[in-house]
Length: 433
Image 1 (tube, rainbow, N blue to C red):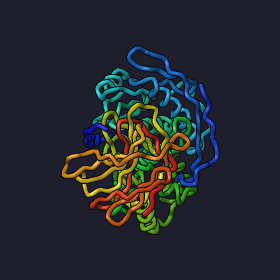
Image 2 (cartoon, rainbow, N blue to C red; image 1 turned 30 degrees about the vertical axis):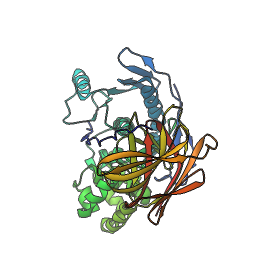
Image 3 (cartoon, helix red, strand yellow; image 1 turned 90 degrees about the vertical axis):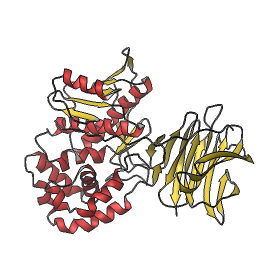
């Protein structure tokens, strides 16, 4: 096992969105851990992408999608849009197909996106990662630092586009116009099936944490009166959709119909909601923190991690017990496992099994990192490994396929996931104190 550099965290980009083939198939909720009002899943098979030279196109009866990226990215975005169309339609109680294909354009850079917006005669947005404007009926966005936020931003701008198509954008207050797509764009997506309005296992943006902080000094009446920002608006819509769904949807229909105070009227006693909303946010938090960016939330019990010649980790915010399973990657060199101790970014320990059937610890001390050979790993079972992490006196116990060992360390007990030089999908993931 060669010593490898670790990744440095990428600074978060401030992202702003402005108002301005195949048939998706709803299936019943098959995951008791999913969040949201009904946790209904919508599925769509991918439509093949067409090579446009420097970009890819995906065409269907609903969408005309342009992607400056890879073919795989274009087909994935196309399927995600198709599945999400029906999810959005159900959320807005709309039985409507577009009269012409909806344009969605994904650019490699901000400059390319702004040039396309200008060419369409649309007012230029300021500091925007994505943009939708009713005059062109086009959703524009450009490549973001993480895969998950690419998907979030795609669903966000497509959400504005469908809000316009289903209800019309007529000056709705920001807590609604932006809040609804901030909320619904957080999602589960496994490549074929989507759930909107879900709590990710992890994200660089960590909107739930920002929302909890934002609501420390706000009331529901404040926000409906115009206060707050995107995290606060996200939280209001998510809380009401989970706890007061009928009143929320009745109120939003009134707001879309030209009654700005329609939601407040439906909720009636606004003051009674404040403490319940804050308690909801205390519990409604992402369980993992991506210490480095190579992590993608997929479903409530699965996370994808990848690394190209480096090691990357995702750390649990709370709890030091972890269970997961991962399949052997189809690579010549790889390692996957867990984070077992964490006293800070310069002092931590990961335990991993590698392609040669060896167990290694990746020991970071004082900012320097060393690989230590821990002997042979048990054989793969059904093409992969279960991994169990438990705190222990003087260190942590880690079991691969049921064979456990104590890894001594003087670090603060922690749990999390680790990947070296590969792409690893962790499933059956659970965390506990």
